[in-house]
Image 1 (cartoon, one colour):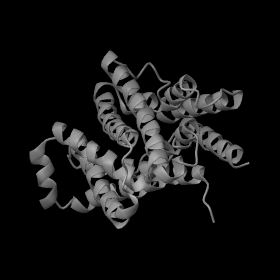
Image 2 (cartoon, one colour):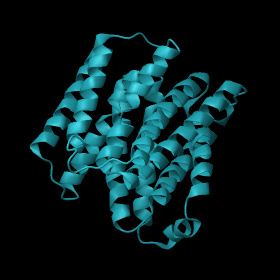
Image 3 (cartoon, helix red, strand yellow):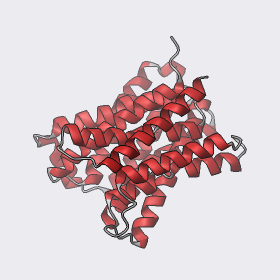
Image 4 (cartoon, helix red, strand yellow):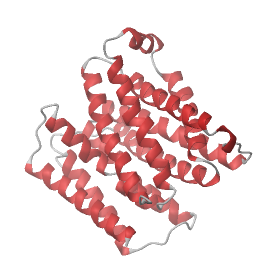
Amino acid sequence: MRIPGVVLVMVAAVCWGLSGGIGDILMGRGWDPIVISFYRGAVGFLCFLVWFLMHAKQNSIRSKSFYIWSILAGAGVAGNFTFYFIGIEAASVAIAATLMYTAPVFVLFISFLFRLERSSWFKWGCIAGVLIGIVLLTGAYNTEEISVSLLGTAAGLAAGLCYALFIFGFKNASAAGKPQASLTTAFFVFCIILFLFMDAGEAAAVWTSPDIGWFLLLGLVGAGISFIFYVIGIRRTAPTTASMVAMVEPVTASLFGVVLLGDHLTMIQLMGMGILLFTVTLLSVKQSG
């Protein structure tokens, strides 16, 4: 049975949400966020490389546009992770997450600019619902307790822009070549970029650490499995739809925190989660109809 693209993108987003919880565990044990991000992408790269080599004869691609889009996708993933962590450091998790998930707005405007999609009240309504849900879920509405610096605001918006970049990058690269080829190329670029920013000594210490299992699990769930589902799903899904469906990631991360990490959600946060789930479900029904 052919699985709808929206469903595959949603599964990928759930995996990303779980990887956020795993990353939170590792950060709680003192690991640097950039090192965590590097291993998430590096383990994923090894998975994609194996997939690529298994279909080597089918992955001979001479299109320059394929490599350009794959490189942009890799830079987008690296930028998204990096700016997101800078936003958390300069502002807060709530603000950084809210600003990063303005990605559907960037995707929508880019789609309109390149005439990839037509505007509709339904899409604008879904975008509004998603953003309202994110604000309620993260608590960013409480301006009295959250101070937002210029750097934090800029970094959060840059994370959202990079998120939009890798959506378009993977969409176009997958259209020009096989998904395993686009993933391998993009995450090779990702590893090179983050390698330049991370602490090499701390990265080397991971191999002898008792936390190595968590790093491997993070890479498998947060990249190896999720991005395979994502690149296959996005080939069957419009960019704006894919970016909005991926909003189930913060919902999954919140549930992970409640169930396994002992976090607590307020009634307003639960309301935000409900709005997100309703909007994503409505979008999925509309797209499959």
